[in-house]
Length: 471
Image (cartoon, rainbow, N blue to C red):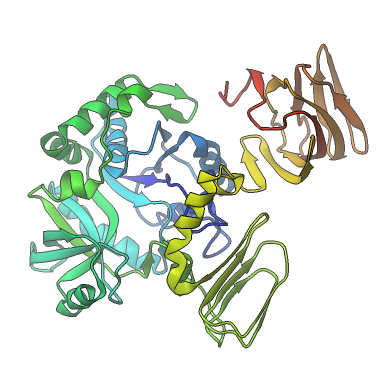
């Protein structure tokens, strides 16, 4: 049986300003109305497999759970990496979890949550062609049939075919990202594929090969899983043990060394959507080659990517330009320089600006809040609480809060009192008083919160009880 393993980690810098550290691209609807993660799950339909096992960081756990819930996607658990250590340790955790307690030894189909694939049928066909080889003990990587001489991808050099049908080839060599001239030689030779970073192998075979070529990684991951704790659907490997892992990819830790690496060609319209120019390539375009999303007017503009979240964007006489507006930032770049967006993000981080971390709208396990306005000693938020959800029992040292209910009904705890606040009613939470907000109804609770005080940061929260284990 196949167990899909979906890696949903990532820092979210290459598609800034829409992608942020706390809400990276895999959680965004970039190619259609579904998010990248949801599309990754959807393309598993038609493959006989177990529900996927997800891997992500602690900061993203509730986003992952909520996006799966939105589309009714079952899963086999959500593994929470204590820190990013690249793909080899992440998949080692997944393999150990898959075989825990003497469970069956499944084929792990390792997928990234942030790839775009146009031809789902071709993707599924390639996976099924790989199954016999993985069952025979091979470690399969999927090589994308190149459509151009790309310098942004690594390459896989194939050797002889391992079967008469030429469904798979021995891996001759993994090659780092080449310069343009070298990439052109690779593509023209017909002996190279783009390195997709997708894999299929039996869990025990990966562990066996990792024990040979990355024993320190395996030892750290085994200790981390032995000390793991469980929180409903979340599996938390022991942090101290996992942090001893080196930062290594599957390619570097195992695939470049094993004698059983094979590559299965995949021609499915794959794109890792690693930049705004890459997203433009896979998006629908008008007669002038433009992709536009949101409220956009294009006049005498060609081959541009223009996206608006809220404001009207009008362009005149632009060529090969990216314009992206989010709720708190605007990006303007030439398409051939979008890789340098990471330099902007680095500057934002160095200046400790919130635009590198999160959006104005911030998702929480109970719903979300949108920071509407702020100034010296005040902040205004629009808060939406999902039906049946509640915020933690908490207090603040430096701010008081005024709550005005716009729609729905709020169950409010304020000190020793508990009471209901309905539409067009308000209440006041004094500084230092223990309080909680809950939605007891069946429709979303929407309210306006006005904070006032000497410090309004999100870290001024002392939690006493929390159903989401954020204490």
